[in-house]
Image (cartoon, rainbow, N blue to C red; front, side, top):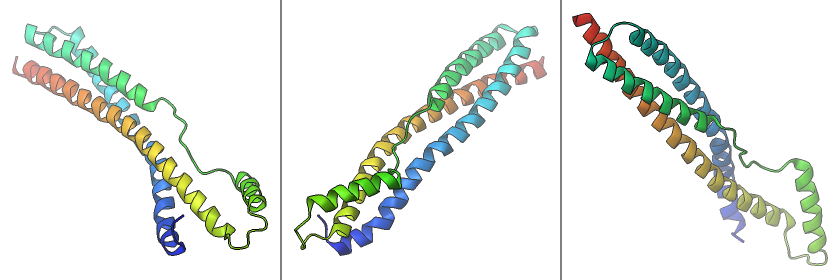
Length: 167
């Protein structure tokens, strides 16, 4: 177990990082919601382009756009798929745990129960951070990939728009 000074130093940083990783998942979901809104707009735009008379190159661009929209939509859906983040236990579970710890160290006055409990909470918070970071990296990867397909669709639609303006 780390010294009390080290635990006092680490405790606020570890618990703040734990809260940040938990909240980051919501941030990714909000950004992915915006990506879905853009995907919807681009899909409507592509539909309008396809129904009009298009040259060969514009048709190819729209096939690329629609393919990118499909893949981007799938990736965004995967990112938004609900996951169960790890979070700190409820206070009643801590009370039960503290009672068990207190009972197991009964008759050992040299053991500081509060320091032991803090070390246990810190250890568990570090495990949660590790697991939640992994979940957030996965969500971030799907969001970034989805965004890349939006950019491809946007470029194809801008090409089509430019070509239609020229003709």
